[in-house]
Length: 320
Image (tube, rainbow, N blue to C red):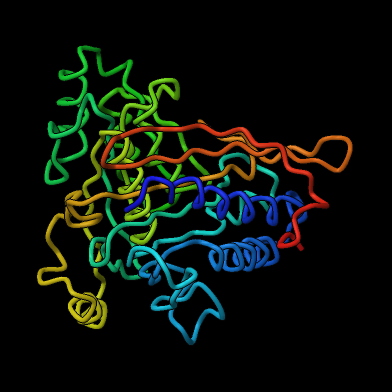
């Protein structure tokens, strides 16, 4: 993929974030998500790619745009797979909380996992723990190995996870081990990426979340030198058959980085909608301006760019 594509993709997430931000704190998650989705779809028309959505807003009969299989781009440039979440954290925006983002990932055709819409068990770590832990181990064994590898006591280890009733047994196991837990109300992608940024103070991300979000997080983590392992939480034969139909020969096996994002190049872009662990949110300024904070990363070079942009809103015809 051309390196110039990275900045074009930031423009896509910026417009989605700017479109969702006016809905912050208004209690309407569907309106916020719809605004971000429409904006992202419009901006993709100007990007020089021949893209196919492999992770999006749902199947064709479920989503009017950014549906799985939809073609994106201006019809020129490289042929790519696209994974999108126009508003990662719809509830977050509706409630005016932290860590909402607009995110996307782009990789060469056939590289991104066509992840079904189901839960995935996840273990995400930063570069210091990459290749040193296994999703096969019990949670206590995992944190003990992590503490040893990092050279710190268990009491100084911080684990992040979604605050969900399904994690009750996991929480008890980790607390009995003596580690600290930081809960997220929503924001599965941001949570999984957090261990890759030392300033967050997060050592591991453990627990279950959406499988599509797992692939998006894996794209970012590849660029950051970390690791995400995942295992689909298949509940019945119908889900198993759907996984097979989507190309998974053994849907119950542990998925590694190459399984989720391939062994080629990948670009990940994100723009904050509300303030988070490593991105600021959209901030409105006098004079009809708005400020956005974005990051864009490339797997091939592992270059990470943080971009602060000032937008004159009246000069953005695609912003509705």
